[in-house]
Image 1 (cartoon, rainbow, N blue to C red):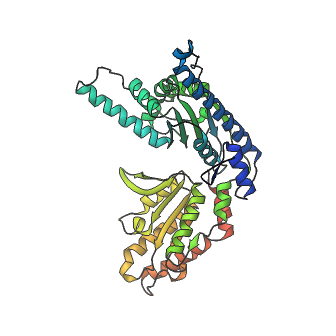
Image 2: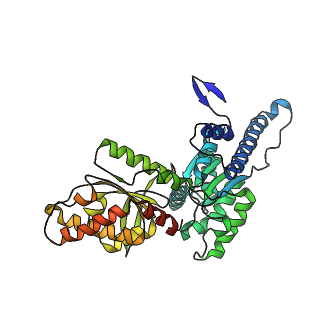
Image 3: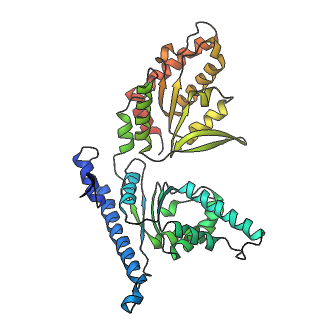
Length: 388
């Protein structure tokens, strides 16, 4: 450990890992420690390459030039959710001594790639370049921006991504790029059953040649364990409730960056304000003050296993439509057996202020389900039934 301006920093992933263990923030896990060792070894290899490159640049001064073409093999870490993959990769990213490095969600990176390809094609149309193939210049520009790439949630579901990956990453690795990635699936399970998968398969061999594949698995889902200690129905509304929701969100997402996304429903797109993996976050207004219906809620429940809903108000007759949607939403999430984390103005049994009409009768069932969805038995059944 070293100190700079009074702040302690850790030179290696192992040093920080041990410090977190001593502080009681994590438990020592032999599966994680194998990854820790591999990440520290990779940092050493990257550091050596960086020093060799500097020496090579000054080769004229010493009368000879060092060989620096030997590629550094990256790391592809796969395993079930909640095992600490993202945490360990973030430790590596903070410590790897490279200025030109980039950490991104894989889908965001590929969106950037497609944007660059489109811009190159537009330049070709305008006669600003004669290079008809956009992949080499795009790869060269990406490598110039960052030669250490860290990807969270490496997953291939889009045919446009699948078709470009082999050539893109061949070019990136030729440029000396080092890849560190986390994924829920092994390389050979990427894009499984995807359209024209045969055209994608060469990428798997390229990936395995240029990145060491390691499994991080084990009996403990640390993400779920953290979330199990958090309240799932938080009331009343206010700054304290918001802080507790944010803390639970951080536990559920394992600290991963969240991004807006959409869910397709019969040719329409339903906006998801924040999503990280299989966890999504909405406000009450996002779901119940917009013209959404059963199909929309079904599509959301099939895409995510955990939903956060902020700022559920007390509803009276003046919010009849919102109450109807909320009743339908809770029924859908209950039937799908999702984990639900909410902040609300009042307890479930007093969320609907009306005393007559169909909504008052139906809301009794909603309140009962909201209460059940807070129980230990419910949360245990969710963990058993959700495929993650």
